[in-house]
Image (cartoon, rainbow over the protein chains, first blue to last red):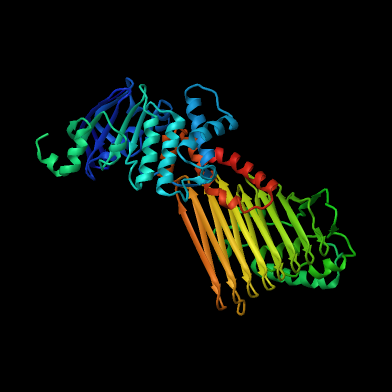
Length: 249
Length: 372
């Protein structure tokens, strides 16, 4: 589903990703772990299409298409979803209104008809319940005054509503206490599906206790320096990044 | 010029003639007109002596109307007309206008239906609105397109009266439209006003608001969405003359193209007006390199124990918010429109009348489509 080959990405004149190669098939959950500054967030932003992240070499292929050539909204309509580390607050736009606009934008781009207000409300309510997102939250301005946990829950709720094909979760565990973490992880696990690929980006191993990946890649200094099964997370937890980084990749 | 009005009013008009005579048509050399050069905008045509028109749609029951071009002005007109207005263009309309409209809401009357007042045509015209003690009204003022119009409007609120004033100034091409409103607000009375402006060659709403009685309040808000070469100016001067008076101001502007948004807001807290509270905020989003916003909040405090805050900010659309919306599938143009609407929303939410708020929202959505 996703093929990243020898990807080099610069922000300004600084090269952040220096030849990253990664491949994910439908139905798989991969994790990317790495220390601060290794390029984890850059990878997530470049997948979602944020401006200012320049691909200088290499390629990203998504379902056979050159992902980098597509605008962010086109990627979203084609099933790419990024759960952001810092979801933005947008005063003046209610959460419900945002969800409706986004959902119908994606549907329209795929040539599907709009869901009416009642249809959207039904869909959102059904999914919101399991993620403990209250009616009151849906009425509030998008992310404004939401706690860290509420923001992350709303990201996962959007993932449940939009039903992406490729979901990238950027530090979804950051700022969550253990109960919030469990709730979010349950939400993510419920979305595991043979037709869906997930890329879980995290600094810490603890999220991977709850979202167990098929494959783990260690990112350091802009490159994948180690790969393995879920046991690699435990090794990192026990020995730290330094230990792995010292070994020849 | 008719001689319909009694001698007391004639004397006030003579005073205005002296004021206007000594200044002439204001140019940017006059501080209050620094960002809106009326002299240049009008060119050789000048302000002329034409008479502009007014129109009241279906006068609501309980409101009395008097045509200022007629003789036998009733006592309430004689008492309140031409008392307050002494700024340059207000003085000009007093000097050059033969007519206009005076409206009265009697003591205690609560008028449910909005009063719809329109000013049309080229030239000068006067308005007077008096709410007696405890009266309440919603005034919806519409601004007709014309080459040039100068409206001088006096509003008097008696003790405990309440007025909500909504003014929508549509996009008006080459028009030069100025209005000066002078307000006197008595104890416990409340004035709420919202000014939605879509600009013209030069559009200006100037307010001088005197909070005269204990506990008087003025709450001003406004939005402007400007494109092309449109210009829109809201200039306010709120004077807290009594103690425990409150004023709030919230203005939001969106300017694209070569447009120019102006907000000048001066708040004076007079000696003895202790315990007064004033807050003013003006923000602008500029959508192009050639768009301009001039925001100038100002404070002048001569009293003790007052709470005053002011702020102004000019910026661009937040790139992170825009990316967030697009990453969730919302196309760029629509996402920009959504963010602009969101930016303006808190100022629109200041309108308490639901119908009027929706009217302003609809006008904004249409304007944002072309500017975003």
